Length: 488
Image 1 (cartoon, rainbow, N blue to C red):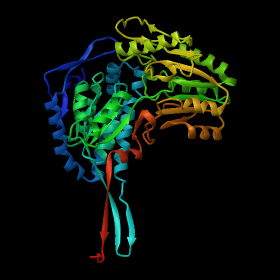
Image 2: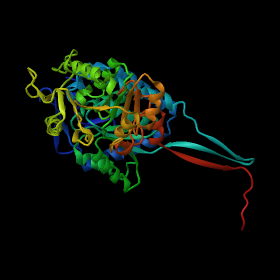
Image 3: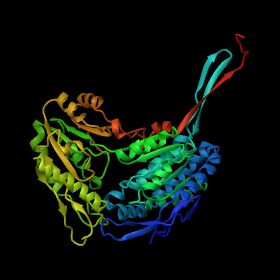
Image 4: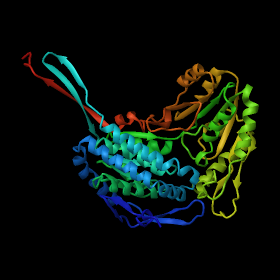
């Protein structure tokens, strides 16, 4: 048993502690077995944790940036060393295939820690000459205490995406992981502690919606960062508005993927598969509306169905398996509901369309990778986020028309274009209303590239130097060296 399973508790002030009289279980989606029982942080625990973070933050902010960065770089190396262990914990907790978690989840977390560890040591202030006797300069200062709430699909990645810029810039952080996938945040806490992070700067509290609400609504939380749904994001933004707290929201999507006639078929199909079926389709940036120009439509569709039907399902701990079960019975029912509505609307089912029975896993909720075509632009499936392995295939003829249709959504998280015409590629992505776009690829999120959405898909950016603006604030300092004139 992993030490992280033994330490199934809150992590507050550098120690694993109980807190709250209630508890909840985190389950293995593949077997239904209880992995751990964790305490629910009550109001007193939230209060204690925020106070602990605030008490530790001032000294951390005064720590030289190069020293803060060194600790983050140390933590990155520890995460890499524990990669296989973390991957297995993520697979047990999320149901995602080990063939994914071994190469993405902890790897992305470590890359993020390393990036901000190096970046913070290079940051300088701005000097602004004004007159012969005056000048100004800027100081970049931390916000204080960051209250962060994670989602269940990429637990340690999301925790690191929020912790790395927070800590690099001199903040303390209180992180609440999803109650469905709480374990890897505790491993990250262990990694920070081993790396030399002072106590109280990275804290983990567990709980349900009430715990998250108490955290983001706390008067002493200076910044709120959420990865979640649009309705949850709206509630968090409203709670933060009362005290005018800083907010970053990375929310849902219904992203378009546009394939032009001149695209390489195999590459475009690969992009569509990665845009829909990775992590069993439980990815916020997924390109679930796939628009294919008429000249390539038949060849694309044939290969898309062939390669989709070759996806393997089974024990997610088997490194040769492509796809595991969905996170929970509730999520499976939601996805099946979307599939049922698509069938009722007259969409044509090309493959999949229901549950899969996988031998040896009667408690798991496997959904077959599903492809619909003949989907109306106004249909439920075209407008709503599914968060499961369901692809909607659309045809198009004209570039201007497909751009208009791609933008006809309340969301704006991501978009992709496949074409050999690089001029057209740049022209189209410039018109797409999305915060993250790809040309001839999809769902690649390097740490050096900002990630975030437009419209209802969120505000603010994670990753890259852009995140600095969302986890710090600028102070301007005016300096006068000469005499001061006054009209009085």
